[in-house]
Amino acid sequence: MLPRLDAEPDQPRGRTPTLVYEAPMDSDDPYWAFYEDVASTQLASWLPPTQIRVLDVSGPRTRFARQMVAAGHDVVRVVPSTDLGDPLTGSGRLLHVAGDSRSLDWFAPASFDAVLAEGRALSFCLATETTLEEIYRMLRPGGRLLLCVDSLLLGLARLAEQHRWAELSDVPRADVVLVPAEDGSITRCFWPEELHALLTSAGLDVDWIRPRTVLSAEAVTRAVASDVSCFPTLVRTEVELSAERQGESIGIHLVASARRPD
Image (tube, rainbow, N blue to C red; front, side, top):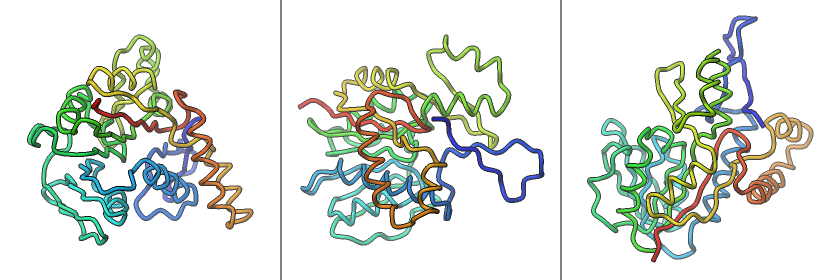
């Protein structure tokens, strides 16, 4: 399933649609509301029922930290020094730390029960191998990592949208696939097999790697437009479908769970 193409509201007629690969801020698009509910459900099922200390390197959005604090977990959230974020409430505790989430060597070893790298965080860490080694060092024995990254399917679609045919033809021979965006940023995209190899090379045991979503944006949008009450059923169905498609590269993002051996 390829990522969806959306035309921007002020886009001139005849211009190629813009590839959408992340939920826009304050979007009222039913697909992205569905996507975020799926991500929230996946995180809830991954978190343990007992209180743990979590390092959150998921970027500027607070929704993941908010969910974990509300569930009673203690969260250390890495944010840019210019944005310490809004105060969060819940039975857990929250600490904002100003720093660069792409380099985590300033944390003490074995200081966290879990690390959350949602929001495609590790796709922005181009030297992903080094970041995973640092995460391994920070995790306590038995500690867990949950991450979300760009899939290679998304990377291929973005290269095609930019008419980078030479780069597309080089992908089968590439050890690392880096894809530029129009804003100048560069992200790293992964096959499930490549992501599995990186995690194990860092010393982590892989629990599973699966697509974030299987249902197409068009199918979700049509279903919600037909009957908005089906929304919770769609989310449950998506979570079950993605769990059944472990190891497959479907959709725009991959989600993985791994742990440091005891």
